[in-house]
Length: 226
Image (cartoon, rainbow, N blue to C red; front, top):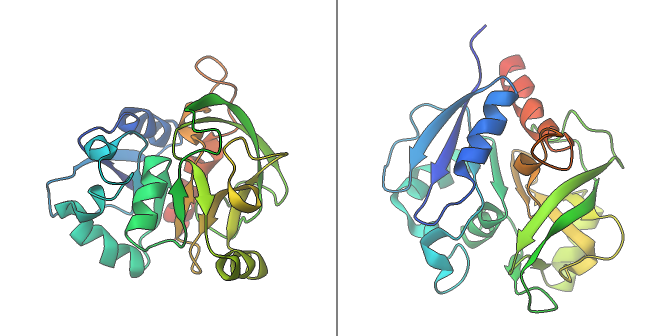
């Protein structure tokens, strides 16, 4: 059986590309490095947009990365059904590319947050969360200065009504996210954005535990079964 090939894009300023690649490998997939300046997705089965500070977070977080050459290939592929996971800065990029609704803004306290957080899974109808149970709580790592999710009231109501909220913070949102939203998904479920980092919670030795590995095993199993 061929292992799922999951691309991990590196932008100038990406910090967590190697961590994401390690998580893919730990989950049984093959991590394929992709470069922001390329126009070739190398035939991957899914893509991870990792955390960091792409292009120095100039203008807005993710605003420049949205126009990287590789995104010219990724955006239509994602709209056609390619599974994509955006983590932290990757989530910001997906919103800037209009692949996900809403936006990420400055934390309510105007301070960078780096801490473990509890997150509740709201939707398992995605290739990235199928290994979890609805309502399951995870311990992940939050590290961002612009992680507060915002959207207009109609969009927030629509996200809840259609089950497009991927995850919520368990308890008060540490960054002031609207409706305690920690992640959202596309209507198809193939495109997912998450502010906390699952790739930093894949084993007890290097993180708070293994709660985050399920995002990657979910994708690997979904791709192999497809």
